[in-house]
Image (tube, rainbow, N blue to C red; front, side):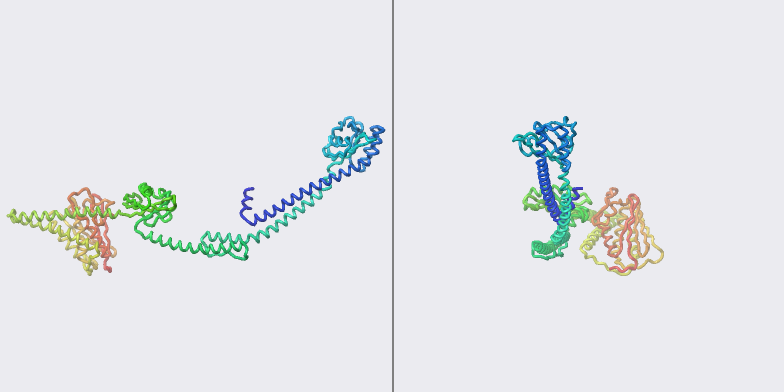
Length: 606
């Protein structure tokens, strides 16, 4: 409760000023009240003592006569009772040896039981010839009394003491009303002080509160606000300084925002990932490319520990190596990132001096995954093409050599050798054509001559050529087509024929022991479909999404003598895409594959 009150008061200058003023008045009032109370009490006691002393002096002569003639206890009792009645005081008559001879509050029969008063301080003072005073609670009547004792002197000798006493309530009752008046005055003074404090505090703190609100708006980014300036004093100077600060901050923040936007745009436009960390490996900066590499969104990364965001110890080692290498050095490393997708990344790291005792690191990450894959693919492509070129060339050379040397006298042998030479020549021609076509496609120099045409004629011509060529090998190619006419296509007939030949050639090569291929023509919702279906080895599901990539060859593991450049399906994809169509594949390992070219019927092709 007290803590909450203190917190409430500390949150406002006006409350502090008001409380200070009220507290000052309260302390002043209390101090004055205590002083006046003690002064009044001392004055009242002194007045009462003087009154009691006067009473004692008035009774001194009569008391001396009673002591000198040694009056009886009854006479003593009657004297003190009679003397005490007008003043409502307690009067005691005490012998020189301390015995109580008479007391207005003690009966005659009880006097023997009253203790000797010789040791009482006021009595000792009186027996010594001086005026004795004392305040204490009476053991006889049990009331707090003020005692004044006077010596009874006869012939220069103290023969007794007359003591007059009154209760202290006579004093307190005399100034209790004064205390009430003083308390009421103190309450009024506090109320007035409180009102004055509120008025003054509001006048003083109102501009400060306004500046506080303006400063809060500035801290929230609004630098258009201005503090009111109503006076030339210190508060006015503070307002002018605050307005100047706001203007300068607005300019600086605008400049910084502009520079940051330029730097962010430059960094996010880079194809390389950029990561900067401080001396404690806290991420200071991460551009869009770096976040993309590690699968992070825009809200993650910066101002967090690197290993918490990217769990890669190799990159952490690059940080340490770069710091250890010192300024001006560049650390290089190529490493593998396994998540979120597998990548090969080339990392260049340089130290970043942030403070005198803090060195961070800036790291540039270049994704070389595709480059390394292309290097491997091109290597394999060169090897495959070299083998593909070498095989037909070697066959042509062998059979040509046999014919040249006259080894084939039999006309059937001559015909057989000629057919071998012709087949290998066609194979070599297809390979060279594929390489040249792919080169033209990659360089953008492939030209298509679009014209309206009947796709049935193109398909039938290619099927007839393959059927004649493969009949001797026991292959059958079945063509399924609707009886009615097919929609006219705006197409490059040679390009469609080449794409269809590549699909048919693949179906023949991968048919395995099932030497049967089915070609189906159909019309599907504005598309003309050319489907090539075999019953061969099939394609695994994880391979199907990559079969149209350049240089990619399916690793079947089942047929070891199937050779190829890995360009056929990529060329098919490019040709069909140029006609505004698409190529689909449905395959299951061990059950065959179906490749379908979907071409738009009667569509405008750019």
